[in-house]
Image 1 (cartoon, rainbow, N blue to C red):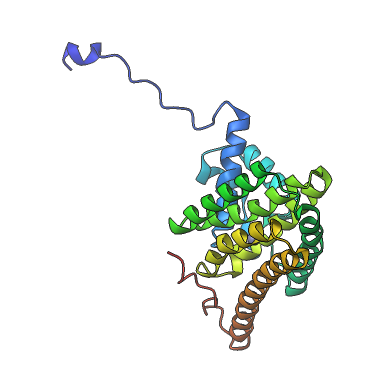
Image 2: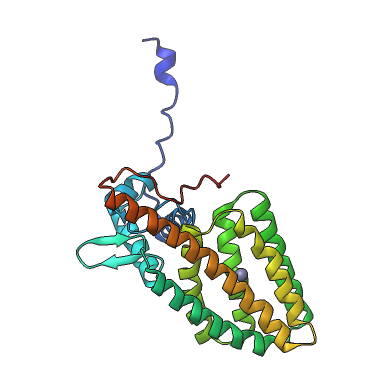
Length: 257
Ligand SMILES: [Zn+2]
């Protein structure tokens, strides 16, 4: 071997796949798993295995375990003792109960905020809706769903109660997932326009009209999600009765771009 080759400095060692900054790893793993959940591609009941996730994400199983526990406490995943973490598989009744809770809580929110928004709050809400529109136009479905949920969290924040905010956060974590699992990508485009209407109605002159706009928005979301879930369950039942497991789900994401 020529001497010159030996003289070249040793290449820098490859970066350690395990980052030293725990908080960074946690956030990265949390973001990746959350995004996968909001993609809707992980179907209800899918197990999330620590080992496979750690390998896919280049982190330790400990980091994965921590993130799964966090997602479980946020109700984004179901944790079963000794069995692990699963994508939630809510019944239609479960879902209806969550939307009912959202309607009750958000009616109170609209009543509180009606005619009471400061100019900078209105500006913040409008700016948020622009970000939603952008995410939708660019086909970033997971971001569009997350930002749509965040719009409601922003309203809750403006009501000035941390207790309320944490409760709404949990409800929205549930409904974001329902939307990811059962709502079609096209329908998700309604959100930014409807959110604009809610902002206008909160600054309008009729509380009844504002309540109607906000509640209709939740009703429509619920109806689309329930229809999607019912169609999927029907196909599952048909597949079961026909003795085949190979039939595809009704919701095959052919609408996704
Ligand atoms: Zn909304």
